[in-house]
Image (cartoon, rainbow, N blue to C red):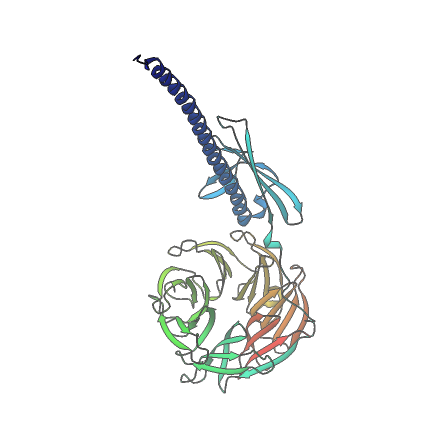
Length: 473
């Protein structure tokens, strides 16, 4: 039988197989190359977007520091002293991406920010990513807080704390009023909580005796922070149950046995001022654990610290210091607070008494006690603190009587005074160089402090009739 020879056919099959493999392998390499290129495109685009977003955030932080630094034009970004700043017209990173931040005018107190990132990949022509955002000068934007006719204010209700009680300070939150007081009998209460849900019929719901008397109160969370008239200048009260406030801790200051005069709270820190002492008068207390507060920093003021206001990393003091009734303290490092600015208001015998920072317009309102020669000295001062470390006196007014506390909103300032024919005063403060009397109310005794909520003013008074609730017509 004739044999069939398969050797030639086998060789042909091998050649065909190799050809097919080569084609398949080439296809695989083309596909893999395409996939690698796609991954590179995604990676590069992601990095570009991240840089563009970072550019918008950098511009935003510059705006927050100072609106005037957000200059019109094209800018590069760099970090200097841990802060974003503009430099040149663009910046280039180590991977060759070029970023430019364009700032253009959009409207009053508004600017358009355009963050553009360009790069040249190995596989394509120049690529560009652009992101935009609108930034506002939020310090100059505000919602009105006042309504109605404040030229004719009306008293809604009042509360009698009892014989011999004199209210010294006041705070309000959700229509609950927190009052501090001193009394003619050390056995009497010095901390009071009032339910003012019905302003026409406020109800005293609880009280507490903490010591020899209290000078100031601030509220945060479930706690009231009070400045005490004894060696424990700061005390913390649990107010989670308004019917049963509880004293949870007290802290005194080393080397200082003088009275606590003022307190403010921001975040995990309480800021406390005392009478002039042989040591410091300004203290920073960590209250992250209210049951165990600890002093972390202090500062020598060499005068009574009568009131405190906090605005971010700056604390503003109203003091009895002749050469600086208005003091700004940098508390960015709570362990080492530093005086960053001060102002000496005309008059050596008028002590700084109250202070309020109006976030609507970046103005500080400083009020003072009357001096011996007050005809040339002013008890009300308005200060521009838009650049906190460079405060500027905008205007002042001679009131002729001690002004103990202040609140300001919209175009009006509300003042607690010692004036016998009008302890509660309202002034038009829209023009700091021309402060104009607007309206007033007469009380039976000196008004000591002011708080505000929902178009209602709450005033503490140095008399049995210790709380007055006032609103517009």
